[in-house]
Amino acid sequence: MSTVPRPTRAELTAALNAAMREVSGQGVLFSNAVAARLGVNSTDLECLGYLVDGAVTAGRLAEATGLSSGAITGVIDRLERAGFARRERDTDDRRKVMVHATALVLERAGPLFAPMAAATATALAPYNEAQLELLLDFLTRARAAGHAALADIGGKSPRSED
Image (tube, rainbow, N blue to C red; front, side, top):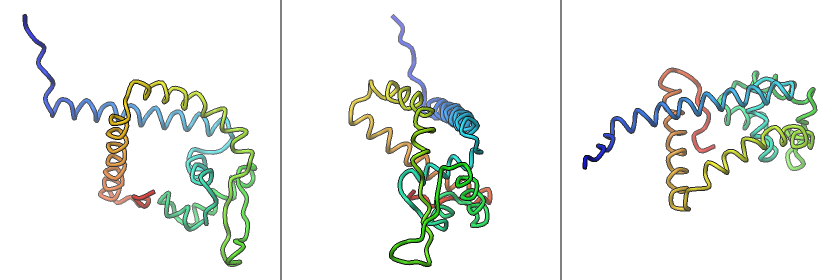
């Protein structure tokens, strides 16, 4: 009885790179579709993701995304006009302006992300905790590698610990 040879490390690495490109592409297409449904652009939607985690300053949002302060000002302006964000003076330091997500974000965006959340939960269901830790480690490392690759081509990379 013949056994099927196991793929080599190079073959596995190539297959993983191809799969990551496909997943990344699907993520971009999904984000674009959600952004279009919400009436914002994809950059605004990605920035909105940072606001959902808690209020931040415009400067912090620029650092987290790698966008310029001018670009972030435009993003915040558009998100405010759409009703998804609001600016508020920091109670401790009146010079600081905090940017908050509004309740409208979860109301309108939540249902749009529900199918992806369910699909992800289904995809992760077969894995045990140790395997999930491995996947998380890989994705964390892949993200850092992406930041490094962006810097290598002269792009402004967001802070890698975000």
